[in-house]
Image (cartoon, rainbow, N blue to C red; front, side, top):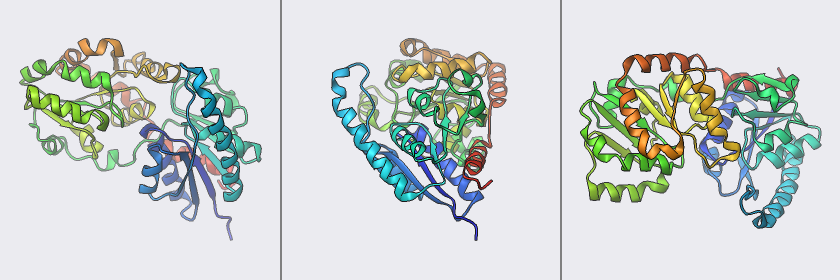
Length: 371
């Protein structure tokens, strides 16, 4: 009888970490239906809800990120890290995985480090064009490092790197409705150019203020309409502001878009942060995009992600501190330039790696000795 594959997948914190993790687990389950999985995340973070919703067990660690601006506040962080390492070691010993996969986020550090110390092969999935501190440290003991950008040997040993791309939500292609139906689903008008505005799973203040500050310009558009995901954190204040100032008829506003396949299908142009997961989805779908990198991330990796596409004429880019003034006028001009949209769409599609989750799963199976 074949050995039952046992896999720990660790990381999380945002949708950008969670969706790839679940995609990898699903790909492994397709290849090995009897496989057993355990996720390890950070207590109180998004993964503690999203992973069980996807049908997988998860355990939480009390780990937290370092406060780089206020170093004196890190005593509690260090205590949580030591406690998390002890818990991670116990979790790994009890579950006895054949391979441990890290997708980034606070919890992946202690989990992968303890697994490597116990002699269990580890695989890192580095999503960004600029490697994070945790993954650079974990790479010393990792057996395999799956990357999504060229030139990652400047961070990792070249012999460990495999270019796989980033996994994305698997329903984006399969569940996409025709464009006209998608537009109608958002209460908008088929035939008009549509701009989708998203700030990530938690929302983005600058992007939201870029829209609020340009409501008169939005209202003036007769050929352009907008789908705007505000994020739950900002939803109430935005709704109050729109009630006071009047919501333009060509603007659909929601705190969260459950059906992103429909939202992408409706869009001729996407305004987005430059997280690795978002970029991978845009590549997969060949969507023209204006990227507004978040300045509030480690090593400013979103700007580096965005520039990697801009250099290949596969996306456009607006700096966060210039977005309030420039973003909406730039988007309105761009979405009406059909030739420019076609070039951007064709170039970004060339960067897609639609089999990323399956390829990462194959690497994990090889490390587990079950390929």
